[in-house]
Length: 447
Image (tube, rainbow, N blue to C red; front, side):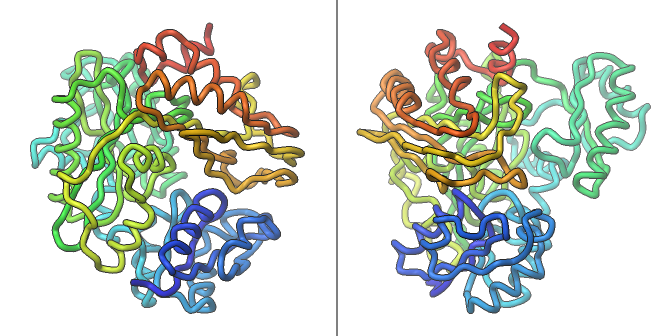
């Protein structure tokens, strides 16, 4: 087991890892930028090291400064959390080349699965359903038009190295496809330094269901069931839950087993999430894999009772998984609301500023993961999420009731938050009935 871990991240996830380290008897060293200097969560680590100015490009994304902090802190391993450098294969390679274990997959597996086109190829090879589309990358406009005619419009142009909705365009006809190809390729080149794109049939109004997996270095792979992440706007998730509502046991089992197949074939290790879309007829299709811990990982922790961060650390240190597939049970229903500093009434405009008062909710079945507090200033330089509110109850109906109570109890004064739209979603009759899909939020906003 490691003696000391560097946390190459900030905010809520940094605090989450600090807490896991403390319970495991592992020392933690956390990096911070000038914008985060003096924030309370830094005091929970054994040591905090400044790595640069507020902009992420000059601090949290500066590999050389993070490696220098690791050397200064005398650590054994580096945990990247999520976002920033967590899926950067070059960073993982440098960490290991410098003698620090990267708490994540190998750089080779990260590159393999981080390329969506290659990941699709692996899925096809092991019989995991994929969305109809191009067999590989699109080489020309003519090729794209030919494939679109074959599979039928609408189609989706997707960046091979994309994520977060960037490098993605929808086309309902040939003219839109021509312009979408150029736009997606240009955006992908600017965002990911990779202009490669491929084509998929657009599954209209699908559900977004993902399977949590964990794999060790001894050939053991397990799934920890699924989460429904359909409540999203512009590919940004607002509410996640497990189990996915109105999903048959047969479909749930098939989807989760498909995730295991993909992971076994790719040689992937540590925590990861295999993402699928489920159409209105109950067919599921692999779309991509996230080679890191997810923001919504506590949803899985609540329904399985397994600490995923601790297991990540154990696996990275060379230990065998702590449990077998048969030992992983699913209990009750968990729901997570991402509490973001943004104004839903004003096109979700970010609302940085000082939180004058924060009163977290509590009570049976309530968990609030946050680094924020009264007097904390939300920086304009980073993601707007200030915390994650979770509930866990025996049934979905009870979980919804508890979440509504907790959202009403939560006080965040001084800034706007996403709470009003989340209350609106949770009281919507279709959501209560489990009739969810990725277009849900846009529809209720239009109303």
